[in-house]
Length: 81
Image: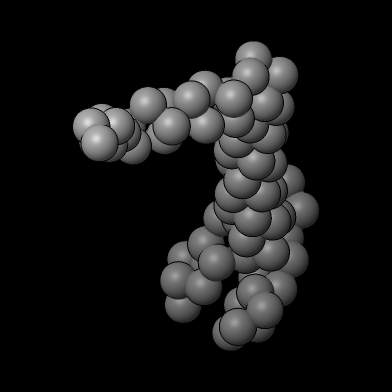
């Protein structure tokens, strides 16, 4: 187990530590892990939204939307002369 210097206080800490036991600062390793997880979650959400959008478009989602809007418009009966 190698020791490295804390970026905040300079005290020696374990290379595998997620925070400094002396000052509580997060290490570079823990920040990279957190940003990687957040990036992966955002990527999954973007792919999910794209799949839903493409699925709706390929199933005629825009046609169904147009039909439902046209059927909701009231029609006026023809007036007798």
